[in-house]
Image (tube, rainbow, N blue to C red):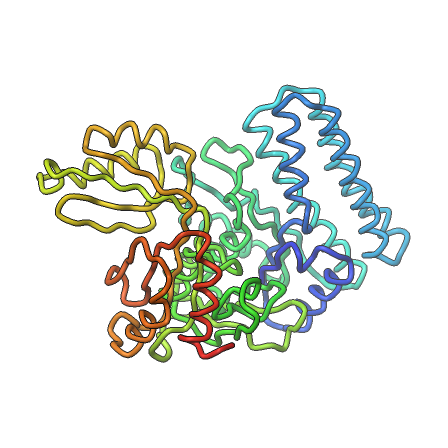
Amino acid sequence: MKVMKFGGTSVGQPDRMHQVAATVTEQKEPKIVVLSALSGTTNALVSISDALSAGDKPAAKKIIDGLDKHYQTFIKGLLKDADYQQKAKAAIAEHFEFLNIILKISFSDALNKDILAQGELMSTKLFAIYLEEQGVPHLWLPALEFMRIDANEEPDLKAIKTDLSKILKKHSKVDLFVTQGYICKNIRGEVDNLKRGGSDYTASLIASAIKASVCEIWTDIDGMHNNDPRIVKKTRPIEVLSFEEAAELAYFGAKILHPTCIWPAQQAHVPVKLLNTMAPKAKGTTIQDNEDGIGAKAVAAKDGIIAIKIKSSRMLLAYGFLRKVFEVFEKYRTPIDMITTSEVAVSLTIDSDQHLKAIVKELEPFGTVSIDKDQAIVSIVGNAIVEEKAVLLNIFETINHIPVRMISYGGSRHNISFLVPASSKNEMLQVINKGVFGLD
């Protein structure tokens, strides 16, 4: 059995949902299809929650009505038969009835999670009704029946595997299941979610739980490219990546794949394929256990980086100093991207300023703390590139005019990362594309 995940743009228009159905049904292997919400829906639902949180119910009502109108138009384009159109309208009406009811009750975090869950529930119901109109046997599979997170808001893979296995065993003759990405239930049994990018995560978790033959992530581009096509004119798709290489690229800014998608599939040795809904015959990118080729394969950039420097000639060499520094970031659940040390200072980077003031206040007893905002991390990834002298020389010669603030080298044999001013990021990606990858 395989897993096929389709993102919001892949199902965002009626003709694209038709294409998804054609792609799914032409493959005979049993499968679980994971769908995101229709493109734009999650943003609208977030706006509804924001308006309700601010007490602006008229603004929330306006967004709800606009979203409802969009779905009515979508249904007309999706389905031809009047009876199926009516069935789809009735299914969607339940969700908009809920959205209108919440205008009359108090806003809460639990209610916010319920609001955000509506997008995936509606997209999968519409897709299932279209399959029914086309005479395609299938089963609509509620993710809320098996997708779980624990007390730490991390997926409970053991529970997911147990619950999903029971469902699949009960419906052993079904070859096509349709389920929702992103949404889940928490340890209290409440509706929750896997955060942004969670549909990729859902697909990978399902693939791991059932030990799928492959986990296919369908988007609107031909796999992962060697560079950001929004910034450089010429890029090329990468045919094969190892899990380690893909994880580095995803974490450091490659938009096609969410970082969390990697580890569940890697743990179960399930290959991941990144494919294009608009060009289903394109090779895309295969992510697998085995490494393929040596040298630089791709570059990715992560924006919104903050550099923090703690200078202390008195304490840096003291036993336990770094542990105390890390404990501050652990306390505020703020991940560190890069770190460098010297005899008198430690520099590190974070990608969120949510707790910055509190973090700085707790770091000040350790030494002088300085902050550099508006930074970017540019990461060059490839198999064993830190061991290839010619590759390293080429990289440093290519970027010798770029003002580099920090370098992370040796932490991974697959990645070299540079911290540069955000204003230099685009130029750095462009010169790397030419100097390292030979693409003008």
